[in-house]
Length: 219
Figure 1 (tube, rainbow, N blue to C red):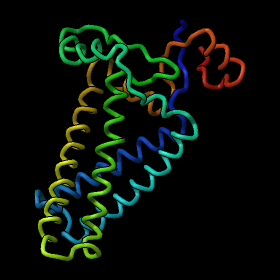
Figure 2 (cartoon, rainbow, N blue to C red; figure 1 turned 180 degrees about the vertical axis):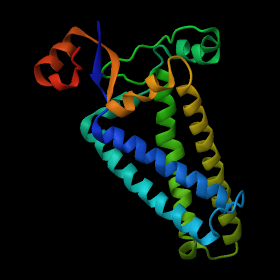
Figure 3 (tube, rainbow, N blue to C red; figure 1 turned 135 degrees about the vertical axis):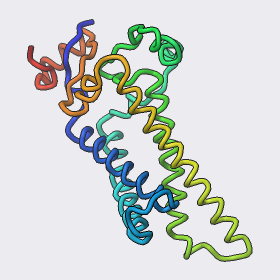
């Protein structure tokens, strides 16, 4: 195995990441405003901004799903138990003792086992639920009829809000973990330049040198 700086985050992946982050921050900000935590904008403007950002995020997710499936990058999110306990122990205990991270990035496994499991849960559970509940909330006028319409709307609203709070927790944890270990810049830099330090097998390095040499950063 050799350690090289390899472009593992493509231009689209970086665009998708930062655009998604921006839209989620807008949704969190306007969501808290809609619930009356502050009054920076009037209620109607906050609702409109929230809906527009949500639609933009859904469109972005559709393109991202298509990109993941067609490029094969979905493999990075396949969960594995190999090394999961070591990584979990590191975040629960070792990180506070100054231990080194037990996981080394690989070309086809850029996320550690806990990250892959977390991101998979985010994409398969939180995103779809908040998407569906938001659409039901927005389209209440089309289905909100009958004796139990009020209770149904309340359930949709509570579900949407609960998942939104779960998203806030994820964002806080994500930002916090960026401040651990190496410097904050070193954690963020790969999602800006696309290059990160990964371990390559001889076969992977030979393939990149022959068919995709621009991915390996020159010394």
